[in-house]
Image (cartoon, rainbow, N blue to C red; front, side, top):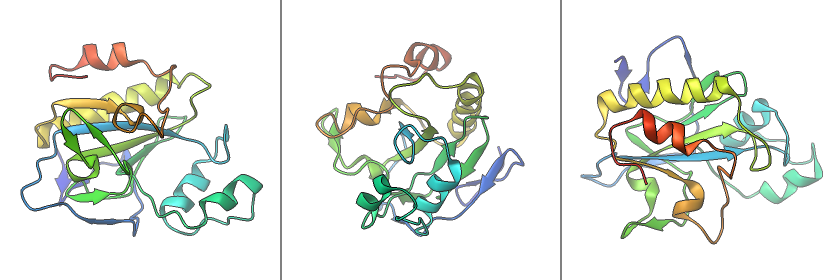
Length: 183
């Protein structure tokens, strides 16, 4: 695996470094993948807007729904576009700001020990086969570097605030593909 200081160094992963990151706590072991979905505005299909959000350059006046994001500083380690293209925003060695207030399995603050992966889409629409293919490829790469044991949806770690990746996400396929425990 080509992973340089937490960055995947393959031509199938684009890099755009987000300022929305910080150090993981000392001794944190990355053992969890958190699956999200994102669309800006809601039901939108623009990866450019997601990139702009993660890079703190979003034009909040471009659409009325974006104004509510004005004070938000978020990121994910990776985002997967509808065509399957992957962009990495944060080194896997750093803490991306994707999970927010989160708790599950007697653990809190999933940003500390997880890799956040956003799929472009929403909770109302199935994801594309190319996104699943890229997600599987990405997780296989990450498994070579990190002792991944869990894959959880954002809704599973923040059930009172989040519903993503939603009912159309194919957990059965993901969980069948990997030998680690997936809740």
